[in-house]
Length: 324
Image (tube, rainbow, N blue to C red; front, side):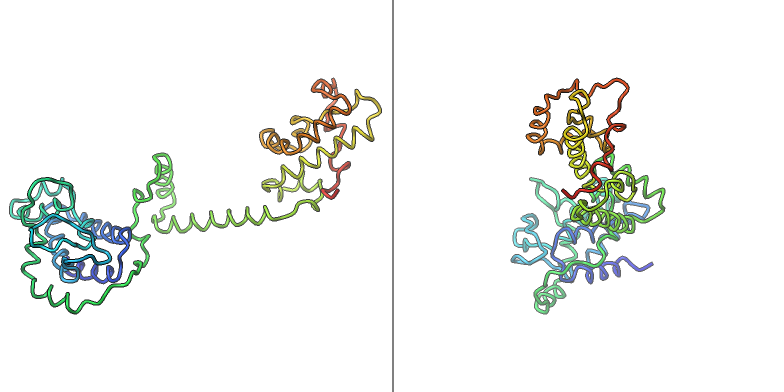
């Protein structure tokens, strides 16, 4: 396994030209996952100290604002106040600092304190001690360093955790269970989920742009290809309205034989859900009311003992397609 100093140098390479705080935080979280594989708080604190020593060589404090830095007013009065964002996120939690030994805690715990809200005076930190020891290297690095250009890190999904997705409790539980069942890593699972959902969305968009007017009524009613089509219910509703109107005007010989155009009647003829039909009928309300009033039809008109509208009105026969 590479030394923690080497890991610090590798992190320096990954941070080159990266200024987005979310991207920097993701790299910090990935490094912390490695550190937390160590069994004791002392080991974790020492590992962080070695990594910080390398980070300071590439990202020293600054007297002025630099992309990827944040203004930290804490520290010694004469000390530069701009620090790289990696030091804000690459830190152990308070429980670790409370557990580490006296010698390790002396400066390391203060590194954590510097990123926390406090009104108490801050003692010298591990970062500050290291900075003094490498002052000449830092000054040389300042002179040679070129302005950094924003650049996103490669494959940020690799360091992502479920918590970073900020899901609600139920969704997080479902995702956790799905990961266990699939045996997939979170990164691969997210990629596959995006692929499936993208195909669903583009497929629905393609269907919505498709004109169903020329599709035979028989196919819309019975072909599984159209059973989940988002425009199926509206197209069949329009045809059912036409079929009832045609039957009442041309087939029925007495008013008792006629059918009122209602939500229930349309549902019986099309097989669509009544809730969906109710919304669709709103746009045809005036035409439907006019037809029902013309023949004096009311809800009792459809109460025909021993008769079902689907046995009397053959939708596919009376309206074979959607072309007027």
